[in-house]
Length: 159
Image (tube, rainbow, N blue to C red; front, side, top):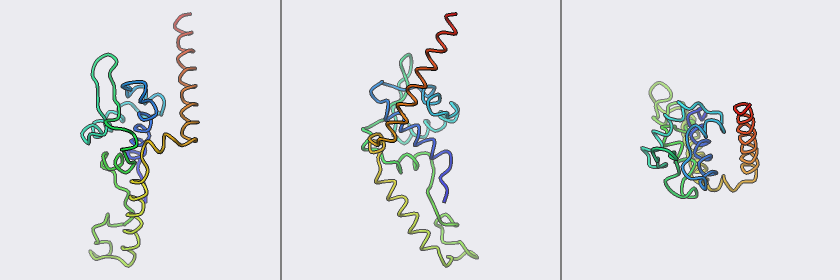
């Protein structure tokens, strides 16, 4: 089983939105800088997230993205599914054609594992993640780094 970059980045970006919801709409450039995700990749992901109504966008100055509903109402599995990602552990993708176009010996085992993973991710919301102490520490570190970057950038521009 492998969760691809698309799913990981989508969850990371959505968690960033959840962490910064008090700041109003968040630009993709801000998320890109804090999380080290390419701006063009975020644009692709947010197009899908918007179509699945997980985020709302605001155009113009002061615009950006925000979660479409409370972070406790958005499961991690919803985010992964919204970007067309599947957490699938079967070799056949759940089609039961794993061995010579028939179901293989361990198909049911891997199907059950896929179900367990999906259920696990459905049981964790972005709000749950925001409340985790480890997430709070990383977010604080990122805020410090961002403030340092802006201060250093201002010093260079003003010299």
